[in-house]
Structure formats: C-alpha cells, structure tokens
Length: 367
Ligand code: GDP
Ligand code: MG
Image (cartoon, rainbow, N blue to C red; front, side, top):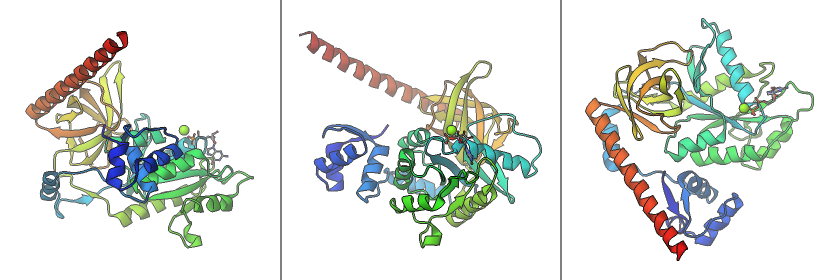
C-alpha cells in the first residue's frame, strides 16, 4: 500500500517531525522520524491538524474520467452504507433488523444466501449495506484507496454511551469526510440516557439538529424494530442531498468486499460495482489476479447476468482469491492477462529485493 515517512509528512504539512510523532503517540502509535506510516493513518493525523489530504490522481486520469462520465451518461445510483460503532452496541443486530425490514416490505422470498453486502428497498428506493461492520474492514479498504462508503451509520448504545471504538469510528468518519447519522440504539431498555450520549458527542463536535447542530440522531431499537424505518428514510434523505450518480454505460469498476476459497466453486469474491455494468463473460483484473466472470449471484443467491453501480454480487471464475479492498476493473482478455503478468512480475521482483536485503542483514549478524 501507499505510505510516507514521518519526516516527509511533517515537511509536506509544514509541521516539525516532533509534532507528528506526538500526534501519533496520542493515537497509540510509537513512531520514529524515519517510520513509514500508511495512508489511513496519515489522513487521521492530518485531520487532527485540520488538514485534508487527498490521494493524487493523475491529470490523464482526470481528463479520461471527464470524457467518459459526462452529464448525459451519469445516472442515479443507490447509496452505499456502512455501520460503525463500539463492540456490543448493536451493529450486527441492526444490520439483521434492516434486512428483515426488507423482507417485511413485501419483496418475495427470504434471503437464503449471505454475501458481504445486501440491498434493501425503502419506498421504492434501494440502499446498499456493507455487511462487514467493523473498523478493520473500513480501514483496509480506505488504505487501498477504496472510498466506497457514501454514508456511515454510527451506532451508539443509549445505555452505554461513547466508548473507545465510538471515538475510533468518529476519527475514521472525519478523516474520510463521509456523511453520517447517529443511531441511538437499545432504546427499548430501561436504563437509557440519550441526552447524556448527545452531550458526550458534542465533545467531538457532533451536535444534534435539535441543539442547533447538523447531525441527525435517530433513536432506534434493533431488538424491537423501533425507529428503523425512520433511520432508513433519513439515510435516503442524505443520499438524495448528495446526488449520488454513476455511469452504467462503460466497462465495470468496483471493489472487493471479501474473497474466499470455496471447496466446490474455487475462488469466489463479493464485489461491489461502482461504475459501469458488469456482465458474465467479462474479463476482470484485480491486483495480481484476473477473472473471466463465470457466474454472478446477487445478495439473495439468485443468478444474475448483469450487475449495475452500487450492486453487490458474488463472482466466480478467479485465477486466485482476491483480497478485500482490492480494486476490480473490467477490460478485454488480452489486457487482463498482460496486466496480471506485469503485476505478478513486479511482485516477484519486490519479494526478491526483500529477500536479498534479509540475507544481507543475516550476513552482518553473523559477523
Ligand atoms: P455488535 O458487536 O455491535 O455487532 O453488537 P451485537 O449486534 O452483537 O449486539 C450486542 C448485544 O446487544 C447482543 O446481545 C444483542 O442482542 C444486544 N442488542 C443489540 N441491539 C439491541 C437493542 O436494540 N436492544 C437490546 N435490548 N439489546 C440489543
Ligand atoms: Mg457484530
């Protein structure tokens, strides 16, 4: 992945290396001036200094995007939502409850197969939920440059309040500059204190609308279903404000949400399509892997021939198991194989370099 030395980061930010090291220590990382830190950490450190950092996109890439994605080709797409929050505050329960809400909304058939993401329909609009809650997944994807979340639901148990992983989630949300709502969960319990939670969150500059701030707080209960509809409607409202669009008329691009080796089907991966339309038979490149899409299944386990922007699909036909957060790109067969070979060679060279360095170290140790 991308990384930068503390020394260089300090220079870029106009700070002293000591200031950066101090911030890193506050975040629980011991670092030296020469230490390499990854992009995700850079973003968090920068945000603590009030600085926005962005990955560099080349001029060519920008121009190409503008030619391909014109006003006419861009079409509305559903929002992609991630749930974050402290352990045991109810992330999994909330995701389960939302999934049930969709079944209740009248779509035929229960959800038989479980992949790393699912979609629900609310008042005729779709929402895509990434079903791998947790900061690790979010961080892994962002470290690879996959900013695929449009919106975060920050779950805070109303009986427990702000906890360490709540703060961690807030840091990620702010570093990614992604819109969010707060779901005050477990409101069915007797010992809840939502006002206290709101008060606690003001310390992180998260102020509810009713107190003059700009953050939506929605009281919910994953257990009873209280407030779930309200939460989903607010999510759609925020999505509408952000005018999310993608061009379906191009070769597909997406991100791997999870990959695994299946005994019967070989390497499989859940991919979230971000741009274009993905079709069975398409060739894909993904890191040092390639794929001729053999089958695609949607989140309900139904075979599909096409996948559109914001749609998660499970894909078979990979040369090897892709990793979460890796970028997926459709291209023609020849290019897919050439690029894969190039990347494999690069990887081999890097490993050879690493190995020779180690053996040199060993050599000195022996002296
Ligand atoms: P996660 O670690 O954030 O994914 O939390 P879980 O969804 O696993 O929930 C942790 C515990 O809290 C479980 O025992 C849930 O049954 C319980 N829980 C989750 N949501 C609610 C809720 O709204 N009300 C009550 N009473 N319990 C809840
Ligand atoms: Mg969980």
